[in-house]
Structures are given as structure tokens and as C-alpha cells.
Length: 108
Image 1 (tube, helix red, strand yellow):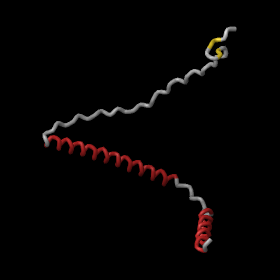
Image 2 (tube, one colour):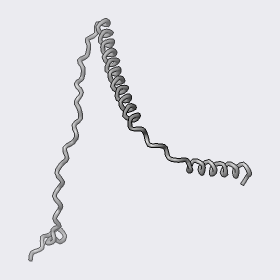
Image 3 (cartoon, rainbow, N blue to C red):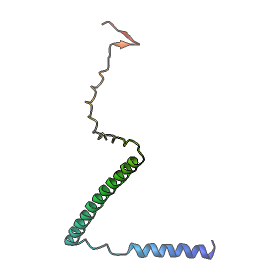
Image 4 (cartoon, rainbow, N blue to C red):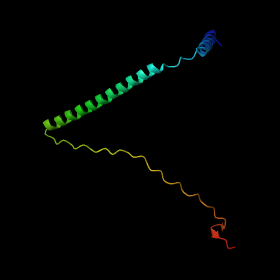
């Protein structure tokens, strides 16, 4: 092995050992965690409202362009919400037939 490879392996092992000895992170502050959750929730609501607003602007722009071009405005396609499939009842366990031999019923 060359000296460079040995030094690389040694430095990797030293770094891995150093990271292994780091103390665990302190538990999060409940008050700060609640404030962060509230802030994230408000940000998500704002993002959702912005998305709806921009979608409405795009539709209005499209319809206005279709009107100025003299083309008919297409009707919106209804979106069908997928429903969870209903679980079928479990099939009954097959009962083995003991009196059948080679496809022919055996008489007792």
C-alpha cells in the first residue's frame, strides 16, 4: 500500500472515531417546537392560497385568450375522486376431498 492510501485510511478512521464520540443533541424545547409548527402551518396555508390564486389567474387568462381568438371555451372536465376499494370478504378455505382418487369418486 502506498503512503497516501494509508494516510487516507487513517484519517478516515480518526474522523469516524471523532464523530462517534459527539454527545447526543439536546431534546427540542417544547415551546420552540410548538412555535415552529404554528409557523410551518401558516406558511403551508399561505402557499396553498397562493396556488389557488395562481391557478384561477391562469384559467381566467386562458379563457380571455380563447374569447379574443373567437374560439369556444371548453367546458371543464369533472374530476372523479378515487374511492378506496372495498375489501372483498376472504374466500372460504377449500375443504380437501378425501374420497376422490384420480378424479373419480371412490365408493365406500
